[in-house]
Amino acid sequence: NPVIFILNYHHKITNIKIVQWPVLCVLAGEKGDQGAMGAPGAEGPQGETGEQGMTGPAGARGLPGMKGSEGPKGMKGDKGDLGRPGEPGMNGQKGEEGEQGMCNQGDMGIMGPRGPCSPAIQSAFSASINQSFPIHDWPISFPRVLTNKQGHFNPLMGIYTAPVNGTYIFCFHLAVAKKPLKVGLFHNFYPKVKVTEGTYPTTTSHKIVLHLALGDEVWMQVKNSDTNGMYTDTENTSTFSGFLLYPDSCEFPRSRSPIVPHPTRGTYSWGNSEGITTPSQN
Image (cartoon, rainbow, N blue to C red; front, side, top):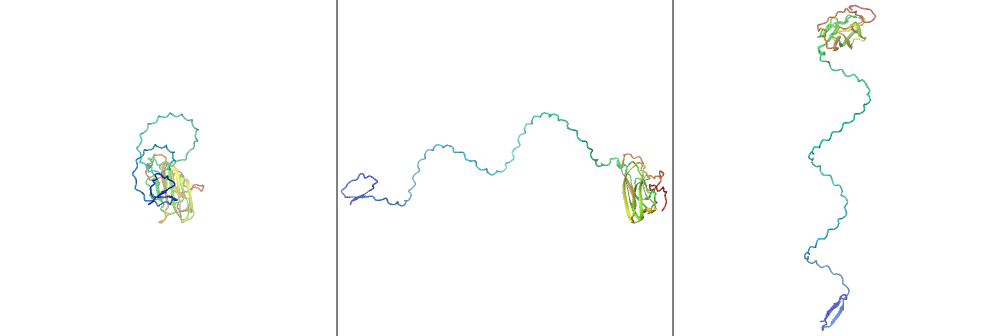
């Protein structure tokens, strides 16, 4: 049989042995299409480990990273050691004297409490009339005594005598009926207060503060019979009251026995130019 050698023009023909058979030389044709990929072969053995290379140069510095979230609050640390006290400073220089200020008098303060001796000097009374239309232009009698512990008020004469120099308060509350009323509060034959009440039946009231000296006298009286509407009954009461607010001193020269004044120092009148009157009945 003949031997067919397919020669590729890209390779050299060497060692061609010429035999007795006829030789048919056929030239190679064009390259065919690539065949399908074959199955992978078995994994080969691991090669030897190569030597470690040299460290490369440092790279450029990167940009700063973003701020992270705040971490949890740490525990309180131990108290530090006490520091050494500082050196004392030097004394400062004396400043210049300032301008003299304005001197303004302040307002009067509130009245303080009574002194410890004031309770030893006490005086108070309250009394009412026992009949309507008392004697006019004469001290009004207040025989119904409500209180008169110290005896400084004479209920039959209707006169209060000051036991000590001091400040006193007097007040009256009077019922008025059947006719007008002109009434006054007198201090040593001088009228301190005069009240006129033309409406009836009604009531009238007044309060006054007086400074009295030891032995001064205070009483009430109506002007005349036409203006003597002072009234009392089972439903109406006319009263006269007074008390020592505070004494001028802690001394108490007068005894606490009942005082009966004798009206001999002057005349009882309404305190004007209408003339002098003597006690008379309505």
